[in-house]
Image 1 (cartoon, rainbow over the protein chains, first blue to last red):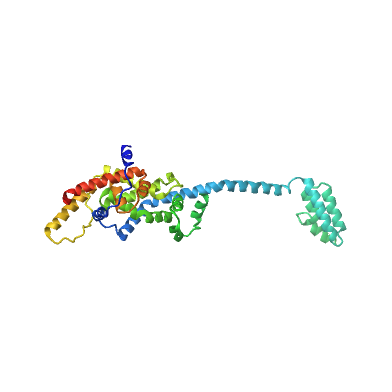
Image 2 (cartoon, each protein chain N blue to C red):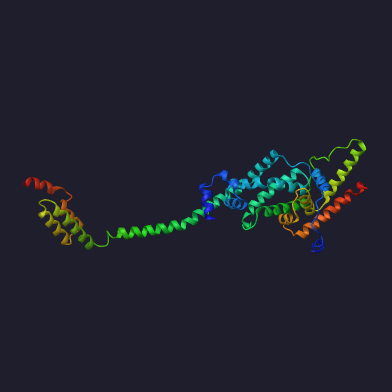
Length: 153
Length: 197
């Protein structure tokens, strides 16, 4: 720029107090506090909608950023639940094996449990269905067996 | 940024702490829609902004419209603000550019300042008349200055800023500031020369 080349020769200007006073007087007094407060309120009102839109956008961005983590955690929880839950539904053989061990340990502690032990063990090891195992342990669901046993006695 | 968003959402920083934050932290919060931070920025810069706007446009009403427009525009463009730089020069450049455009586009109301009198130590009518004429002539000369010259002369002489500070605020070189100052002072002195003789 031409004026920059010319200004390169200009020294740092001296301050002119007379000129400063004249400019200050021409400009008049600075706006008062009350006037500035009114203006501030006007600006706040004019900017409100834009700020609200930013807040909503921020909330959405924040949610969607964390949503990735939430989805990953949910997937991990599902897999974990499947692994733990799957242990109970892997196969009849494993269930029956576990049940036999459990029943054996329970019935050995009960007094006069030899008969029960043998019935349950036979039911389980004979690859019976879960209904048959339950019938052997607590009797059929109908309840007629209980009546029959009472009459026979 | 994520942490600021989270803090803004949960309100981890109380509103009364906001005025203590620096401009960059306030801008960061404004980007996430923090009303209190925006208000703190406005409070911090409104007085200086109004002074500059009055110098550019010549009357209070237009100046206030310009300041409001500049603050709202700054909010719209806040994403383009470079966090590594100071907020004030960026904002005042935006204000000044809007003011220069407003000067060109608007049919401005009268550029008569609100009030302000030269010191009235004069005793006789002749002296009062002469002072009135000097004042009118000086105001006319001041108003006729190009916007940047008008700002530079006021910022240097009235606000007491250095040419380096003015250069930063206006986004121009120090040489250009000196040039505008030189030109403005020359015009104002010429306007008053007749009364000095």
